[in-house]
Image 1 (cartoon, helix red, strand yellow):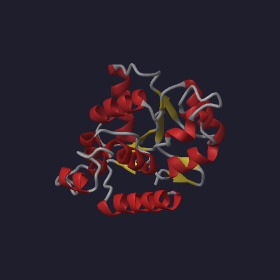
Image 2 (cartoon, one colour):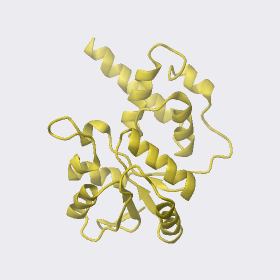
Image 3 (cartoon, helix red, strand yellow):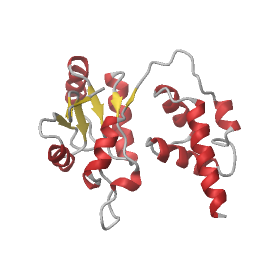
Image 4 (cartoon, helix red, strand yellow):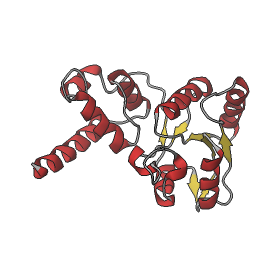
Length: 193
């Protein structure tokens, strides 16, 4: 695990300087690499690849379209990395106009960095498109909403069916976890009706 005595050994990759300041306020000795937003240069990718090989990196990017795009670009180039996620609802500013790591409270950030996902090389997918269909996560009128529930609970954001399948297998998430989340959500929903 990357967290040892409130110290993170891996380099945490964020989008901007406000994210850096927020992490430094929580972890005094943290090493943070800033991508400087959505334009990820070849130089940045090469440096991140070297850092991942020598120290390891944790991708900790905003839970929005650009953050997911940056995550995908880096992961595709660098190879297997660690991924930490915040739920979108946990990192919205007070005016409800911006989403970003810098708006999350310290406790949520610590929880996210303590419970990161490690990308696994998937030889044989354990979850299939058929499984997603049976769970109403694709091909049904409410599939998008159910994928949102799964993405929020796991902290991996809203995904289309194919991306969700890829992430579930890449992060080694099991069908039992998905069933548990959906079961809990349906129980809460039924109690509210």
